[in-house]
Length: 130
Image (cartoon, rainbow, N blue to C red; front, side, top):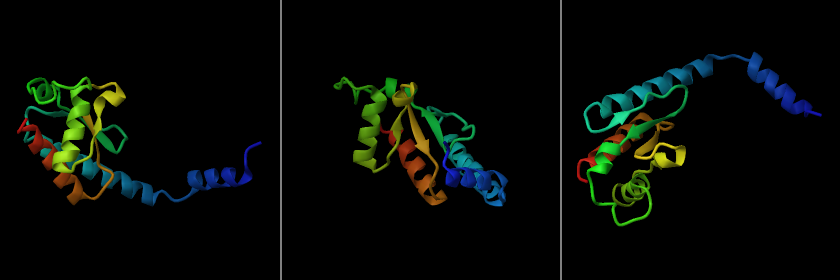
């Protein structure tokens, strides 16, 4: 039988005020626009617009296919790129191949705007030196 505490919590979530939800939706839309605005400056990278998520996929397949930097590893290039990016630029992203999108990286925007701007700019600048 379902737990009565869980049922009460679910009912409160569904019936309660939604102002905070609306505020967070607006915040995440702003953060997604920040990603898009920065990415527009880098024509070799395309970005997927999030549809209800707090992350976006950056397609780096053109960049990664034109570099030999990661050719000496059996791992996919997006996996190698994410390791290199963390080691050399201190930016953490998730390889797209983990989500069936090889050549891409997943970028979260579940953080403050300054961190997003700094991290995304660093990520995209890193693609220009490969």
